[in-house]
Amino acid sequence: MATLVTFHAHPDDECIACGGVMRKAADEGHRVVLVVATRGEVGEVPEGFLDEGEQLWQRRVAETNAAAEVLGVARVEFLGYRDSGMAGTEDNDHPGAFARADVEDAARKLADILIDEKADVLTVYDDNGGYGHPDHIQVHRVGYRAAELAGTPRVYESTMNRDQLQAEARAAAERGEHDWGPPEELEIGKPEAELTAAVDVRAHLAAKRAAMRAHPSQIAEDSFFLAMPDEAFAIAFGTEFYIRRGAGPGITETDLLAGL
Image (cartoon, rainbow, N blue to C red):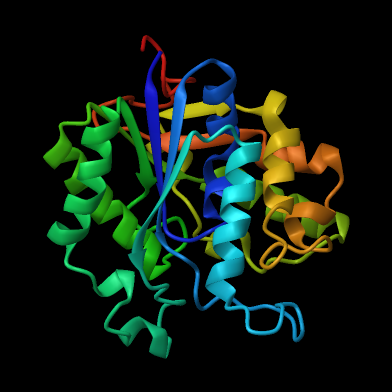
């Protein structure tokens, strides 16, 4: 059996991006470790959502631990950086923001965990962080450097299939369900030609969705993620896409832990 370490920027990122792969790995007997760079300090919640005196980061840490249990995670670690907020906001300039962290220092913290766990596989994000979030881009930088320091043999970039998303946007607009704007301008994830791994996680969607529900401060019941019918959810989230440097061309892998 192998050890999968999955590295994320904020609480709730783990279930959206890699929840299916995490639960699949756990069900197959592998060890799953979740590392989160920040505690999601600058997320938004409705007025009165938090208990008196409760800080948002405290709630989000508790939510992460609850989601991790659903996903079969054996260990959860936070690197201790501050949420940098969306690109162009004042939070980008906070001295403790993850996006401002020294890459070498942050990578050393993650590498220590990789070494301790004898990690076989690490997941990070693609070089644009999926959609340009500063903390997600930093996960890419820090994750790759940590893998170098630790000698972790496999690194996969969690991403989305841009071609599929654009096709779904066109179809939704044609059905009159939702207009996301010009599909060609939907530059999320990476083009299908750049993807090297596609993991079918449909058997684990109940756990993935339950993990999302474990983050109510950020994922409400009427959110995009939870409000859609099961069939639509399976189409949108039933396959998780990754890029591994040196693999391909095209999608040549269907299991991040194959052969381990």
